[in-house]
Amino acid sequence: MSEGSVSDKTVARLSLYRRLLSDLLNQGIRNVYSHQLASAAGVTAAQVRRDMMAVGYSGTPVRGYSVPDLIESIGNLLDSAQAQSAALAGLGNLGRAITAYFAGRRPKLAIVAAFDNDPYKVGRVINEVECFHINDLGPIVEQRNIRVAILTVPASEAQQVADMLVRAGVKGVLNFAPVRLRVPPDVYVENMDMAVCLEKVAFFARQGRTTAEAPS
Image 1 (cartoon, rainbow, N blue to C red):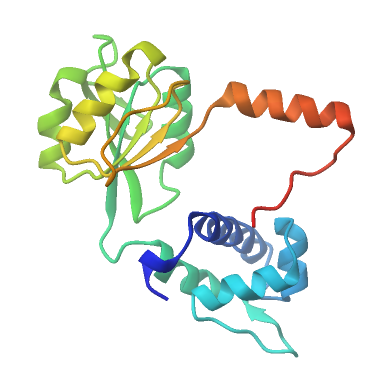
Image 2: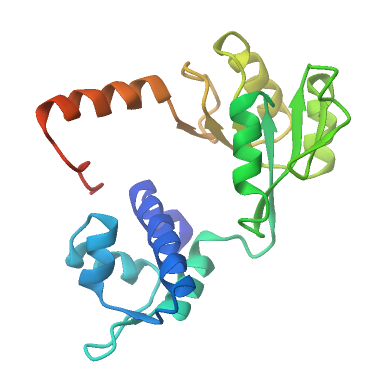
């Protein structure tokens, strides 16, 4: 299946499957059945099998899926043939936590530059990522062929920084700022509004729901 025909929900599930499979592999487990993976991911076994069609991989009734082979197959779809570089704008507490989490985690998708206006941070290497002044964002993003960015700046600065990223050639933004960004149609934005997420969790906690609905 081509990348363009895969929905965002399918991509999200495949990414989750890969993380779960990596955990299994670290435990020495080398085969898994669709119903086991489905239980861990909070989806149905039928959904797992449909998603595996997207990566062109099938298991066997006797042994299920080979964990290493399935990880590789998912990676062939999700990962770029060439390593992709990402930038992070806003190296506050959240930005630092994100760079620490991603350090060495995904060799083919790495944060290679961070941007801030704090002179104490500029010029330093924090969690293996060099920090540049925000005014240098455009040239650095262009020079390093960065097409993916993470936005962790205050809401009041988010649109201005997003505009800078888009002008520099960024085509995908993971936005943690609590504001909706105005970007061209060819730029993909994933909004992570933590206040909304927490309110959602609080609401369903009052209702007694124990698990989130699986994405369809």
